[in-house]
Length: 234
Ligand SMILES: [Zn+2]
Image 1: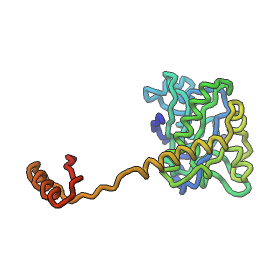
Image 2 (image 1 turned 45 degrees about the vertical axis):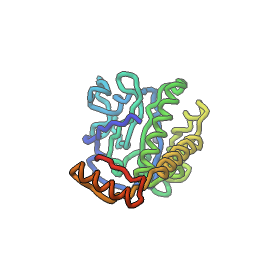
Image 3 (image 1 turned 180 degrees about the horizontal axis):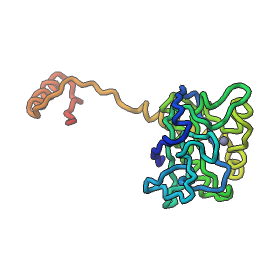
Image 4 (image 1 turned 60 degrees about the vertical axis):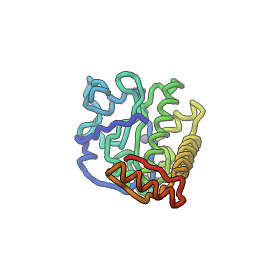
């Protein structure tokens, strides 16, 4: 993941200063053909590039709307893919309005994937993979798993979000679904868990500032039968 941080401190959502206990992640896509992060994230930090229309979301109400998410995935000025964190992860976002069962704003971390014209397979696979990285990172941060991840349109069906189509108007065009997305997150989480399991538990029986004292002690330890003992400098 290529993660940067630019908190949208001028957005009314940030200023509202409410926090949540994250219970899930809601995946959005922007619904406009503009893959450039600078459209939404600003001002230019040297990587984003300059938004000449100054219509990014670091203003009170972007386009007159009360809207803000926790992160965006899209293109930097040089064309490479990045993730920008735009709100503290436990800030209450304004990303899915309210549904009949309550609002995902109260429970879900949200991010927008910047859409292009939806037909570029290479761009899609890059942002799809970046979104998996972000979800794995957030799951580990908040003890969540793949079952806690939904997209906006699924949020609507669950009654916690407004009626939007994202991301299911896009993913299937490239052979993916929210289920395949969740599966990819699951596999990555399992792989990382296995890696954790392989870490050793070491037993330390001495720590010395003098090298010769350490060597003398190692001799004693080895003579006592602990022949696998060794010195590690830290
Ligand atoms: Zn959405």
